[in-house]
Length: 320
Image (cartoon, rainbow, N blue to C red; front, side, top):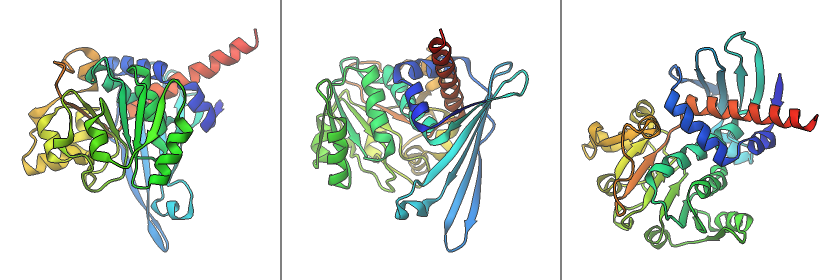
């Protein structure tokens, strides 16, 4: 059994390879039981959560992700989310690998957004706005830049100092990254707007959106969360990662459905449709597109399989 830590998982999952692995996995499909979500009492603190996500393809690997979420950890400067991913051989049941769960989640989540952008964002996109400064932000920037010719990135966050530090860390000659405090004008000048926040109220106003922009919503993974307002929903051609996940958990989908702003039929498709070519993505240059992601076990399985292949190939090559 191979054990892959955080840095090994990140290094093994380069965005171009992972985006293509996700594309192939969405084309093929996989078995995905409903996610198990359990509340765990923690004396004197907020309840924690235990998440169990699994997926498999007959005759191939079986994957199970175990994540714990302890909300109060942030106040102690500790990660709120920790966990692990187990990969098994689908023919023998043998344990193949144990991997860092958060690293796998960050890489596959960013790659799913990039996969969607490869269908929904204009081919000439050069300007990206990153809304949010958390752990996912750097991965999203890297992933989007792998599928579109991004050369300028603006970073906005509620904490300007964090936005500035992130921009300084990521800025380089081939990708100019700077912080901004003007969210409205940053949206107006963007080709892609990627949001990864824990916001409970909309941050992006629909009347800010320029024609042709692609809006990537990643943070609203619970029904009470929201990153874009109703005008964004009204103006955009909408896609999701999976219909089942979005209709159950995505606040930017669930809330407009409940209020009547959005109907289920208004959701143009999901990543299965896009990868299989059964639904067209962007239909014309000035169209506003929107992708909402809450994550799915199929993405974890594709990422874990790729990471193990990369490590095994590298080890074999090093012994030659």
